[in-house]
Amino acid sequence: MRKSRFELSHTEKVRRSIFIFLRDELERRLLSIAFVDTYRACEEKGIPYPFVDQKETRPKPKVFSKESLEFTPFFIIFCEDSIQEEHQKYIRFSDSNKVRKDNIRLVPDVGLHKTFYSGVHFFERESFFELLKSLLDVDYCLLIQRDYRHRKRNRYALTHFHVKIDWPIADAAESLAKELRYISKSIYERGEGYANALQQKLFEYYGCHHQSAGGRRTAALSAAQYLKNIPGLSSVYILSSEARTFTRYSESGVGRFAVIQLEKKQATQLMNTNNLSIKAFRQGYVLGETDTFFAVILFILYRHTKWGLPPPDGKLRILRPDYSWLGVDIELVLPLPHSEGFRPLPIKWVYKA
Image (tube, rainbow, N blue to C red; front, side):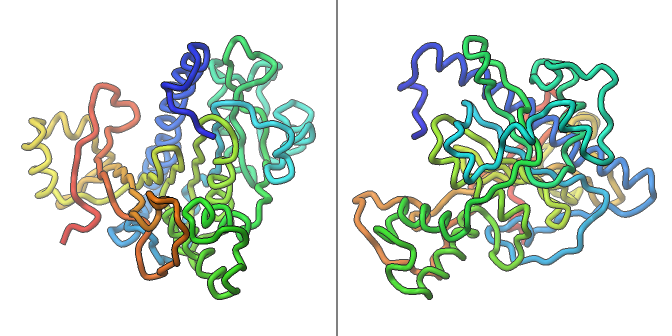
């Protein structure tokens, strides 16, 4: 369903370029909300920041953590095109949860703009991120998509809030298992035990453990799988106050952001490799520091192994639950969201001894 750039018309290429540019800006702003604002809030309150450690960044982490009240959890879907009404059965958006003044005023603790007007939800407006931030903590999901009423202008807008993902996990697992050729028709065609194993592997495919993923993360991976049925690119963003990581599902695969403690010895090696002074490193990458650590933002891109990809010959195969479907591909120390002139720095941290 997702066409490569070479298969697009010129108009579609322009739209995709706009979408990718806006998506980059959305990610930059979300990183600031997710990590910079949270880190500064912890500093102001004099409480320790809940750093993520190595085992929590590995594929399929089975980690149970308490919720951190300092985080603002969110769940966002951003689509290149408009989601058609035929998908409302599983992605619950309608006039009742459209971003309109009469709908938003029903939500407790959401402050409306004094000049709330019909275009406030468009991406190019200065008010867009203010509106987005005020709605982030509303339960369920926010939907950003191309506004179908402005087909020629390629305008993107926050169109709906409180969007519920109502696609059963069994259906999501069946869809993925067919895609990867572990079944041909039904998830139960090889018995209930096989079906249960496929549902567990669905969570692994999306970088979670089936026992430790909460409701928001489960809904996000279900949405990511369902969106494969919709034309165009799409990205799903999920921040769990329990996991303390910010995860992105997109055409690139599974990506995860986290704030970590980087040992100063390793940071020095990183600076030397990349020709950076300590001043530049502090200015561009460091949230905070102690005598032994720097607090930095780490990004991990995971790759699917051959067992988590469709087989080259297209033939049916048997599931081997012990074979991993996901591995670490790229690790980067990211510049702070406001440090626009700095580049990400390659690093090896997840499996560092």
